[in-house]
Image (tube, rainbow over all chains, first blue to last red):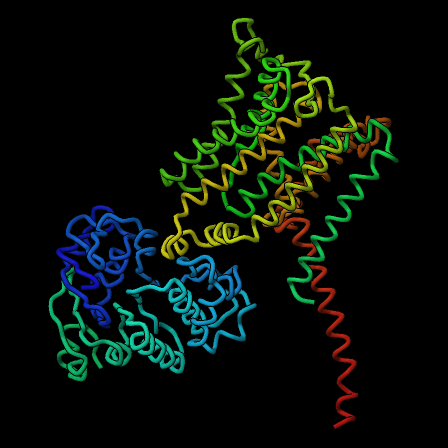
Length: 235
Length: 357
């Protein structure tokens, strides 16, 4: 089991957001998480990453109990996180951004970056540019590439398609599928773009009021009534 | 010309000017000028310590003068007790570094945010000022060294060559030592910042949360850079105690703390050469204005004789008009000139190409 979450609770200050989330993710599995705005999707990822402290429950990553671990410790263990809004280092060049991502082996930075860049041809001509000068789509690709430079085993992706041109969305789908086939990457994806989530996930968890209420298959997303009821998106 | 070659060119230029300055000054300048330049070099080392932790680490520390003063007092006290300068010199670096590490541990691991960090470091400085200030009586002594309170400690023995306490370093030697140390520290910091460690420090300054989520512990890195800054300030303090053979609690005072920050603001945050230039420029100006006694009763001569007022105007002007600081603004201007030249040459080429087609 790659990730085992049992009854995870967290919140901001005294306001509880997650009221006992439980699910498991197998190695190489791509999981989608859908829900209304404000149901706790991003909060769940932040809690998994350790950025919000867990007030209850258990998180096991690859057999290790990481419930109380600091974010940087989880990242070292192989949890990669691409947050909403991308958060690249806008003052650093694209290349330096990627170097910051190479947290694992200090020695072979150049090889790691070259390897990752093979998958991101769009970034290659931009290496000397500063991160802030890239378009939104390019920044998203950079955030993803930087995450892959750390050789994560499980990637948490928070709304990667938000405000991004369709051609780059297709590229992201392709890159992620390739990573799964090549290196057995596992992924948890929070998303509101139904096509994107259907193209990538095997199972989709529906989150409502801080708990997981239902699990659906990607085909079910073609049913407008079900989508309207559980996800709050009318198509 | 790309950024990397410009960078190397700049470093080479600093090296050549620095070495030329080091070798030529004592041959051509009078002794009082050399003495004056020595203090500029010492203060420039202090400016570098803040340039490192504020400009690159993003830690706004009002307390560099605390480490500076601790270095000076440590050297003085150890020197009276030991008499040979090798150990006091090392202590004057190690003790402020340890103090910075202890303070930094509580601040960074307690996750105290930037503004409070400024307040805490300033408070520590003032606590040191007040405590040292009130140790005037003969009952306050460490070993044979009397702390002297607000009177300070006069007659501090100068540095000597390691191991030989009779071979004292003279005034000219102090100039060589300070200038060489400044150059060594400048290039050492350039190396440090070009390394993986330096890159991570800048990454943390840019976006601390992001760096943490990537797998770096920002607290440990900030603590490390803060400790290095403390050690450098302590070393500068040791040289300062040597320069005047005297140290007093004003070294911990508010004016001293603010001055270091002003050097960095005027010279330019995020560069190393900027704060050096800012420090030397402002000190030179302070000295020049201080020497300028009002000779007439015109309003401008009286204004120019008021050094704090002129310096204040300069600081306000810099914050409002040149917020990036002197060196980064000059760099931008140079790049603009370069671009303007290439633009002219390319526009001159265009008709020719059209003809060929």
